[in-house]
Length: 112
Image (cartoon, rainbow, N blue to C red; front, side, top):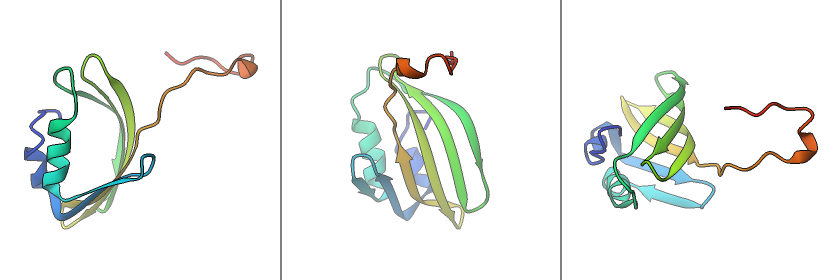
């Protein structure tokens, strides 16, 4: 993904690959549609990725990644299912950031 050559990513996706976005209730079926969606996504430049956390085993992987094109920024939690060394399913959560509510300010510290 970091190369921004999204069609090259299809080499690690199973022909039965499915992407689920539960928050918007969207499903993308197939490696080519996944690559095309990333290629067509309205960006202001190259995407840059920061991996905060990555863990799993041979069949399940979880990542916590920030992405930015220099204008837009987002953080995604992604759940990968792997079979025969290919990604067969990806469920992604793209939570919207929000301001901490003032009612609990005496209990928390703000993160950088």
